[in-house]
Length: 192
Image: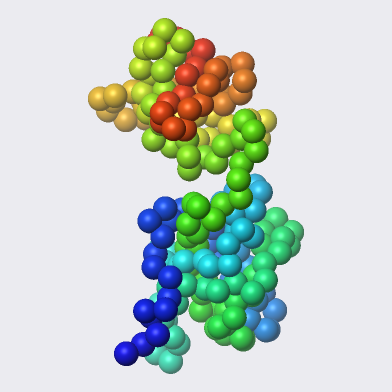
């Protein structure tokens, strides 16, 4: 029997936060492309859960299978990405075998957001209503324009992106975000 009973279970609140793009150096470090401009979620957890990515290389016959969990010893920003080292990856070949792996972290491990700050993952799925309590739809994603984020809101019964509303996520249009009630109130008309 393997020691998998001691391994933490896949978190119920797992959020994809990045992917491994290759080896970095010869001592088992690897490069990570974070999915957020501020990769603090990667630094907040020492347990990174992995799943193969679509572009993951098939393992060579002698190569080990992708581990389901990495126990991170060290992670730091490097250029526009992150480099990390884990306890069980000790050489370049082992680090290169991780290329393409998708990294997930339990949402509960994320750092606490500041006042008036929100993680995108917390906004997706929230109902959006205007000041007249008219339902505008559900947040299905966000866009980063550089200057600010934009809510992608899909009306109930919509047939796709053609019906999508794009609402800037700025104080001028966002009146209130109530995570507990799973609702965002906006200054936005039905005909916008």
